[in-house]
Amino acid sequence: MSRLGRAVAYGAVTVINAISCGLGAALGVKLRTEATVRLTNKPGRIEGRILTDPDESTILIEKTVMHVLRYFNVEEKYGAYVETRSNIPIARGLKSSSAAANAIALAVCNALGEEIDDLTVVNLGVDAAIEAGVTITGAFDDASASYFGGLVITDNLERRILKLIRVDEYPVLIYVPQKKAYTAKSNVERMKIIADEVRSLHRMACSGGHWQAMTLNGIIYSEVLGYSAEIIIKALEAGAVASGLSGTGPAVAAVASEDNVEKIKRAWKKYPGSLIETRVNLEKAHASR
Image 1 (spheres, one colour):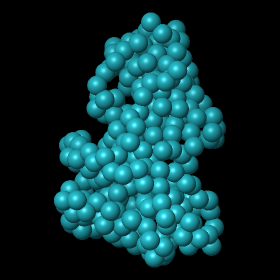
Image 2 (cartoon, one colour; image 1 turned 180 degrees about the horizontal axis):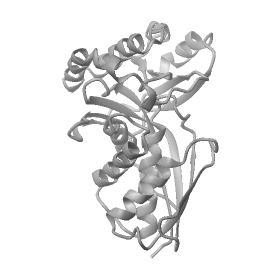
Image 3 (cartoon, rainbow, N blue to C red; image 1 turned 30 degrees about the vertical axis):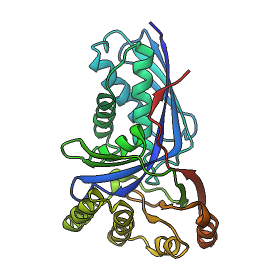
Image 4 (cartoon, rainbow, N blue to C red; image 1 turned 120 degrees about the horizontal axis):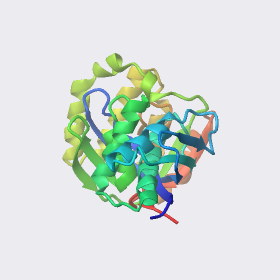
């Protein structure tokens, strides 16, 4: 049995934010988180380091490892030392927690020499994220898009994937303000005001209007959460296929065709912060060497 495990999972951006009503959708992107897990002979002792953000809490690492060890009934046998590395900015709405949980859960399975089905891995990560307090709903939509890639439409309350759409591998531009916004600290009651509207957008996405739903979701959540929707509108003016607030922000994503990437970049140039250029991801999370 291997005592060392490695895995990779990917980032995602919001299509429909599930916080208001429990129905969501997300789009996988080619940002990535890598996790390395070394099992130890110190049961109950789980240590973690986030190499790219060393000041961030490691509670999600600890909870995810423990959930997987319990699943295999080996929590009394092993502890673990975990390192993660990621190019997904933390607390910007880009599913850094979902990607980390998926990568860590897979890496623990890899270290144990065990294989389990994909949805079990996703659910173990979702359970860990809820217990760690880094998510409000469990973010099953985000976790599914991170794990499976493509555009995933879900019922988060029942943890069901309703549709998995292999969309074109469009370029995706992400505007990232400097300020962080932790999902768990968001005003849930305020977001529930728009529950009926979001349900309508979810039906629109299920019927094939996922890009329109992404844009409208971004505009209404921006208004509710106190962000300006101007940057979304600027992306649309520059020819974006869709644009919207990702998660509870503050990042904004734009799905672009090849010929309007530079136009969107110019439209966003005046806004303070950084710009990430990536693409739609269709690759599943996986163990790695």
